[in-house]
Image 1: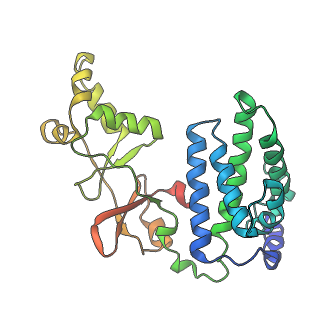
Image 2: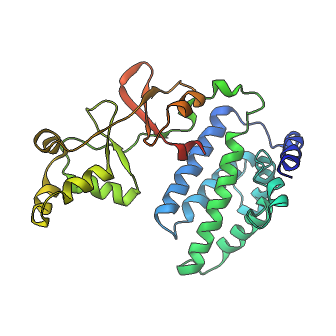
Image 3: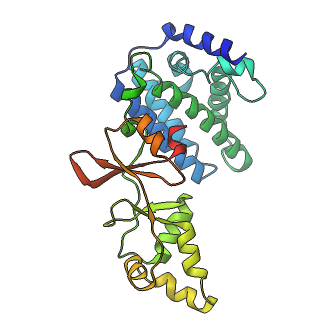
Length: 275
């Protein structure tokens, strides 16, 4: 049944919305991903996703309207994703069709009560909506693309947060917890990461009375004096293909460096980013 749904999906590609250049499609996809990340940190932060969707709708229509008036063009765009209508028809118990999801978000957004369980429910629906639009935007040029030419720069997280050698471990720990990171790239240590496991092992290695002191030690000193464990990461450049990145992926993120300046870190990519 899934193959039938996919055939329906590709047969509908001719109905898609006004032409988007590659850079435009990827820019809006990245904006939606950033808005999703904000919402995942705050269960009531649906506004970031709504604003990103409104920006996309305004671009497609060429007008500043409201969510209801953007629906037609956004539905056309969403047809580039099998997640929008075709797969939900086959697996309705798991997936909500784009048109119904859009209405749930639009109506809930206009409601006066935007807090507590109501806001969290709206945020969950907004995240689902964003995921469909992201998939549609990233697939927009797929018929023109050779998969072997898709660049990792289209999917990586740009300008990643880094752990600096002069920062205390307490601050690095805080950044990991706030952002739910398991790894951070280490500045000035090319192709190396610091992991949450390494910090936990360092802080808990001895009696608890040393924890306060170790939280205040800089990462650089912890590496030099105490031998805190760093993790070697695979590096690639921004023009390498997604297929090449998939081949390198193991249990740690990949560090993406500028092709013309291998010392410059421009992104980080994990299996999560390529899903």
